[in-house]
Length: 102
Image (cartoon, rainbow, N blue to C red):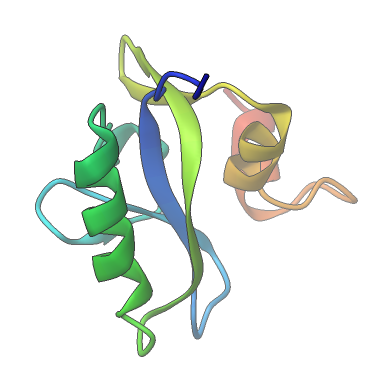
């Protein structure tokens, strides 16, 4: 029996800068997971992923990531996606530094 589809977001890395980015419902890319489109339909998710993967001049490695609806928008369900959204953890800089002051 096939597993039930769970909500997803589309994530990738920005081609030039390397930042983790998320596809929004308005067909733009955002560095903020809270702005990502939370997709609840499997067929729609596959179509959106094909569109994201066709944007090779902007992104690399687009894929569907499990997410759930949170108070401020989608939230990751797997530690890998939480790690990706906060950036490198080998030393405090960029996103890690900003989170340290919250």
